[in-house]
Length: 134
Image (cartoon, rainbow, N blue to C red):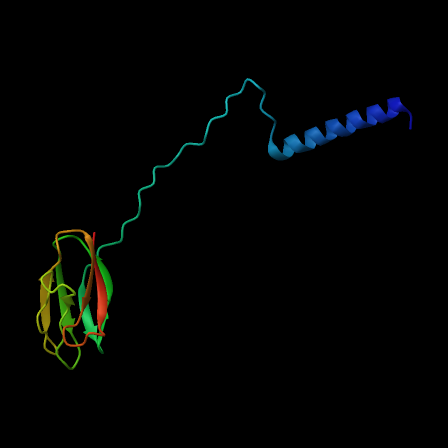
């Protein structure tokens, strides 16, 4: 192959590749074009959906054991078990239902300060959960 034919073949190959690439990725911008970033979408951190309902004590367990409420929300606790239970914050001055007899219901007011509050049954310390105030 002569140098002239080789140069023509390379030019043709280059033109073909450029056409193929621009068809694949789009035309290259010229130097005068301005590249702008795509618009950003403001994202708000998702917050947990506050619990609405009743915490049920079943078979020596809280259902749900972990839940989220708004500050100052009223939390109702129903004991469907066969023995007396409580739902008491680890710091009992924060919240406490007092004794709930089998078949009974009690309520307490969630703390006004956002945070997480571990709790347990005052009679059965293996029964535990976490109240989140948000």
